Length: 227
Length: 81
Image (tube, rainbow over all chains, first blue to last red; front, side, top):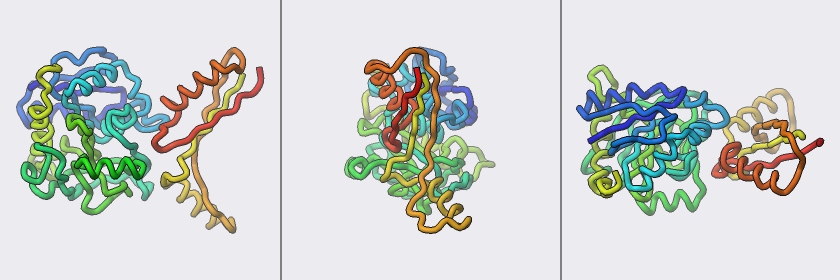
């Protein structure tokens, strides 16, 4: 499997994400600069955390218009896997690849802590059988408060698109949402950081299982034909 | 021509900043506050003049970049030549 990690000006978890897939899972991983117009051979594209374009205007609003995003959209529409972590999740929402938006935490505080997360029954690879009922992952964000209109929320629930929920909501997210997947099942977004949860010195090693669950989704949605 | 774009949180979307600012205003003695909402103003200076094509383009730019329709509303004012 080939992993591509996008880099925007202001990305700061690109190396963490690279390290998770390259060292943690031993997969062929490379960086793709945001000015690139092609992703090359990629089974999974990771949109990493950070503060792309200084979070100016809104988190993820400007990154959405980077040249590489056109290739990312084509990759996603062809069934290719995408994982957005933290700022990456915000970018995917801004780009319309995932529904909803992330606003300022209700506490107005930047929250940096390890969270207990309930695993949703969200498809053949991302569920309590593959991950157990709960995982622990760190968060570090000021804008992780998930918002969507009522119908949108009902649709997410109905289709099992909520992949992770906070057990103790740190940011005011509707429905305690910490992460979702697209209806098609190949685009994942989450505020918690699997890329900060796999080394012995990390607060948990659950990031490996979460990353594997995302990768396993690839064999279920037929990415082969597209990439 | 000067264009002022106003971006505000949608009425039914929680505005944590507005709530915090409202509390501060009350603590400074403002009575009868019903709500406080915090948005942003984007000021543009553009050559040319007001016309339907410009407004159509502005609407698209406001919806695509300057605001996020999931959580925000926008309107703009055009002044001068």
